[in-house]
Length: 228
Picture 1 (tube, rainbow, N blue to C red):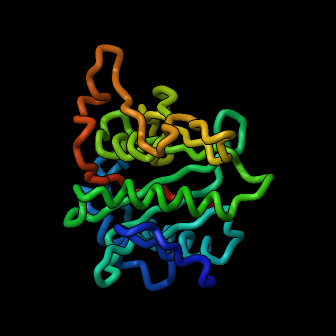
Picture 2 (picture 1 turned 120 degrees about the vertical axis):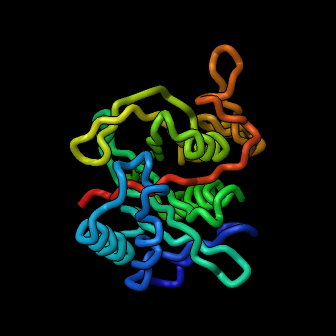
Picture 3 (picture 1 turned 45 degrees about the horizontal axis):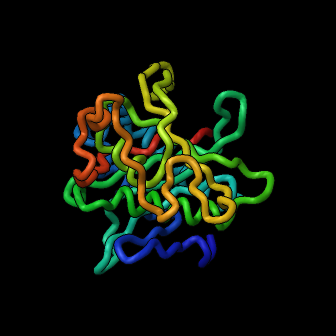
């Protein structure tokens, strides 16, 4: 792990690459209230295995994926996790992302800020051979995480069956973000030219999933485990 893995993430949050000292952060998020949309808490053995995989990612190729702890000033308090990893989706290589924010720090836009910081990090390390698109697959019932995707500028591509946890097919929204530079300042995917996130609404004008489009995101999703 090098200094380049400590990522400035704007005025609100900072991202640090996962380290062997971060197990307590995973354990704090492994509670029923934080895993409603993810099949419930993991066993201690599965959580320890997840921690090992997260730590190993910090020693691998930066463009292959990273997990980060989210730090909130003042004091760089660890408040959650965010990361990305490689995935094959619809026969093509893509990146997937996921995040988690601890309950005391939800409702402050932390998940959205961390996701935007992560996008900057991926763009800085990806190569010509890297995937072009970053996907997120929140449950259709997870209004908070769908709101994060909307505000971060992802495009909603529809409802898909997504396997998570393994063996369980769930109805999820497929959100996509184009990581390539847009020509002539034009928008990519759902991102407006001025960087503002689009307002994703149902055909009748209501917010998707009944979510108030101006509501602050609780960010109560836990990142799926990256593949072995």
